[in-house]
Each structure stands twice: as C-alpha cells, then as structure tokens.
Image 1 (spheres, rainbow, N blue to C red):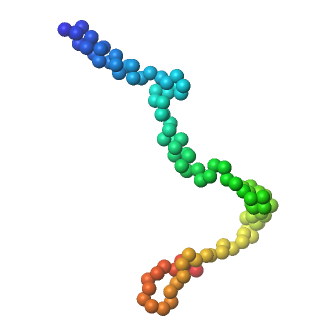
Image 2: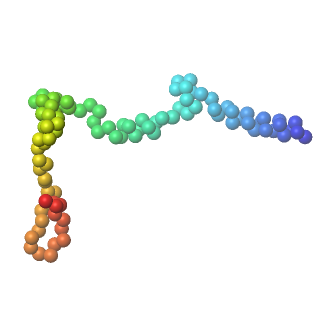
Image 3: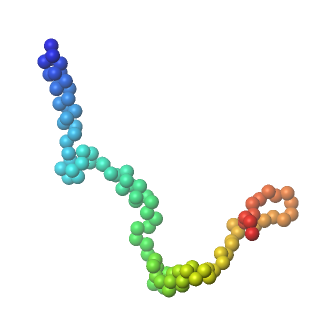
Length: 103
C-alpha cells in the first residue's frame, strides 16, 4: 500500500519536473524573465538618443558656470532666488483663485 502511494506521488511529480527546464538561450527558467524590468526602464527613458543643435548647450557643456556657482556657494555669496508666479491674482470680483504663493 505504501509503495502504491510512492509510485502515485512519483508519477504526479514527473510532469511537474519537466516544466522546470532551463532555456538554453537565456539560462533562465522563463524565457520572458526580466522583461518587466526592461520595459519599465525603457518607458522611463525620455529620449535615449537626444539631438542637440550645433550652437545649443549640451549636457556638461559649461564647466565655468558650475565652477562659479560652487565658488559662490563656498564663499556664502549665492545669488538670491528669483520668485516666479504661476497664476495671476484677480483683485476685483469674488474670485477665489490661487496666487503665486507667499512673497
């Protein structure tokens, strides 16, 4: 009786073991393993090959500006922040529109 159970369990496990074969190309159990991560990285990339104009600024183009900013920061002579508003404040009427924040 015990051997029949063991045989039944072995025959049941045999098809399940065949499902866990490795893909010879990727070496993974699942051929599509990692596609979700690759898709998320691709979607979050704005433009992998940006085109810059000849006269336009390029990333890391102006080290003198960055050096000047770092020097002003170290000597505590930073430029004041310029506040910009996003909406206009209506002064007449009963509008409850938003302003540009505290000034």
